[in-house]
Amino acid sequence: MGHNSSETKSYDISTLSRLMKKDLIFVIAVFLILLLIFTDISIYESFGSVRSRKLEAYNLAALCSSEIERNCIHTFQINGIFASLVMLDEANQKNFEEMAARILPDFPAADCVQLAPNGIVSSVYPLQGNEKVLGHNLFEDEKRVDEAYKTKASGIMTIGGPYPLIQGGDGFIGRLPVFLDDQKTQFWGFVNVVVRVSRIIETMNISTMESRDYVYSIYKISDVTGNRTHIYGTDLGKLHKPISVRIDMPNAHWELAIAPKSFWVNIHLVIVLTTLSLLLICAFTILTLLFLKLRQSNIRLAQVATLDQLTGLYTKQTAIFTLKKEIDYAKRNGSQVAVCFIDMNNFKQINDRFGHTVGDTALAKVAKRLMESVRPEDITARFGGDEFIIIFRGKNTGTDYQSTVERIRTVLNVPAKLSAHVLADISASVGLAVYPTNGNGVEELIAYADKAMYKEKARMKQAAKIETNIETI
Image (cartoon, rainbow, N blue to C red; front, side):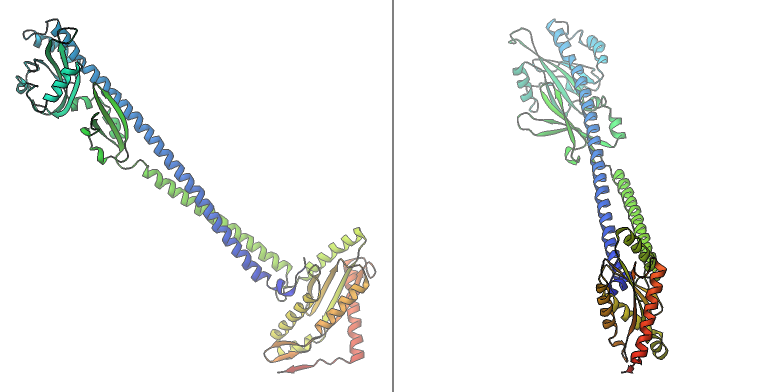
């Protein structure tokens, strides 16, 4: 509980200033930690929403691709049906239209079915809207000839396109080469099924994609060159980091890419999280500031209650409370406590001649000198007016107390410059009381020290005829 005068005097200013700096650093640290925490939470939640949305997009793409595969496989069963009929010689020119009229309604994605003996389209159903395709020779069409020969050579169905159809519009064609023998040496021709892209896309759950703000692209990848050919939807280059799913078509490689219309990150969620984070950070920071302000106010109140505002020394009440505790401790441990009572000799003359401002400076000078004369663990207090009290702790012999008292007298009896024009001789009378020799309680010890101080004051006046010398510079 010990203080020197300068330390105690500046407690309300420098110590609080240091506390305020520490509090400011603490507030900044709290702000940065909260900012880091909420930023981490926002990033985690944002990336979590991205992962969830990508998973949702992948599931949608997988569902749509499976629908396309299923519908295409189902639709191209027509090729096999008519190939079988051709081999049985039941799909001739005479009964083709009747059979196609019964079969085609079960395959809504199919635009038309064609018979192309020797690669020349001779029959088509429905004929309406497809008249231009009759007589078309696949082996003579520059755009179809390569695919026609490759299909014939492979002996399996291939899918060509997408490309503009002769009958109008865009679509792709499933061609199944038909052979009349098991060795596949007797080439009959092709059974073609034309599927418009739009009809296949209609099987996808496009409304679900659009309602969730997704865009998509369907494209074909060449197994030879790896080039992409756009089939349907938005151009692939315009999709932002799309999720792609393979569509396995007969002898073809398609892919379905899906992406959000804007970004994978949910901007609305980011804005909400950012706003909430900032509000929470501000709220916590304000609460921290209020808590620290309350703490500083409590410190100031404690200072007002325990410290003398003029000298920075402890107050009379604090000194009495401390002395009581020290006496209780000494009773339990069989140790001593000493009290030194000090009174300035010429303080009233300084006040009367130079005013209270100079008098206050004199009191502050005395307080500083007193604290420089004692140890940090000793207690120095302003008892009232120009009276001071010192509580010595931890000393065991009268010699120690007396030597300290003599040092106090010596230090006090030195002229002090109180203002730019006032140099005053300051002296003080000192009285000492020791527990338990001179008293067993607070009142007894203070009364004994006070009486000893007045005896010394009287003795000094009588012996030296003290006359305060005050010089004006």
